[in-house]
Image (cartoon, rainbow, N blue to C red; front, top):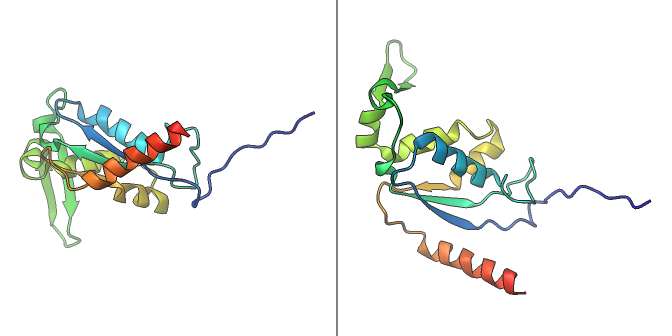
Length: 152
């Protein structure tokens, strides 16, 4: 009888690729789910819970995201300075005008694990309001690595 063992990825074995996602016209929650899956590496066969197996994700056109229903007026973001009476509230509509990157970051952050690994995953997320980003070299280098591994 042949014994099989489960594969666990080690930190040195995993190579992270770069993904570019254009979110123009996409629904906020659905695209946040896809980004969280890519950051965690759950869409890869080498997915391991205790190791960073996910990819770097570059999100473009964050200012052109869509939401359903009346969330633009009704959804609120809260932050507190720690001082008495200093609870600040901001609506989703106002947040999309001023800081559209933060909207996607908070949506993805809520879907990641609440531990050191989740915080490391969040640092791999790069969000930009427009369609330009400074990670062209990494994205192209990642594509070249994928092509060379597929050919061999």
